[in-house]
Image (tube, rainbow, N blue to C red; front, side):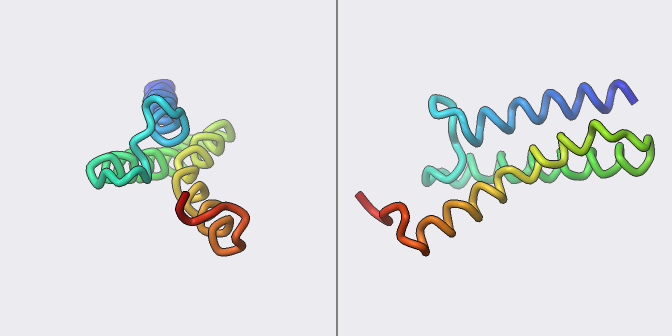
Amino acid sequence: MKKMSYFNLIISVILIFLTFVSFSRVFLIGSQSGDIVVYTLSVILIVTSIIAIVKFKSKKDIIFLIVGLSPYLYMLVIFLLLTLKIIPFAP
């Protein structure tokens, strides 16, 4: 169980850096390879989190599940902000 938690922690930290931190951001900047890496890591994190929640009844892995869903939530928020014209489409 501890190995899976450490694995989820490492993937979630990498995922946060690739999605949100500006100097290492590769998600949604026009790079298809960066998007594929982020999607792959998020799917791995979601699957391992669900396995840990179901198999080990671990409540702390819900946090990793939320972090795994964060790129999709980020896309949803950006889409809503664009459609409601809160942020401009192009500078």
